[in-house]
View 1: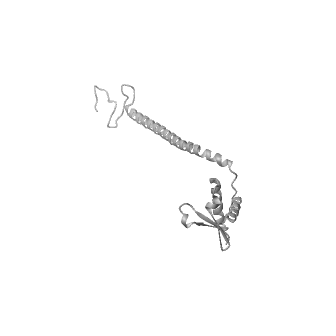
View 2: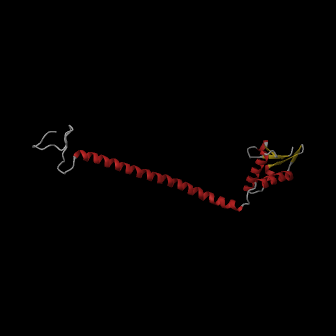
View 3: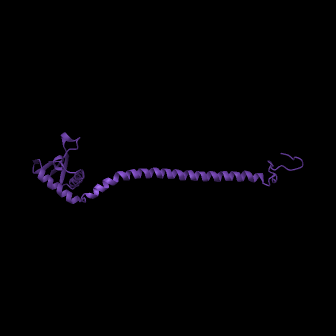
Length: 162
């Protein structure tokens, strides 16, 4: 850039002195200010997008939680109506049931099938007694063995004694 009509240009690309333009604004500052403002706006937009994204993720999570709560509440309400679970009590019941309902006796041991022991009982009782049976087996008081001809149907026997 050179001199026009005896006035200096508003911008000197060679690094010389810069004067204000016709509007009283230093052109070198306009570029810096504009760049800063664009960067600030981009940061604001980015933060807002992150907030919206977080809200959407939380909304989706909240929807899934709400759906789960709708499914679980009736189950929990039904469970509240059942007697409390007592592992010792149920373990004793299983041992008595094996004694009373044993279909086979071998070498002093009484053997009962799970089908015989648990027939006609509500599902929650079946689950509780099966859990108690597992605990008894872990303690060595009973032996649980799969029925060879009924393995796929979940058949098993409970053996008590030697």
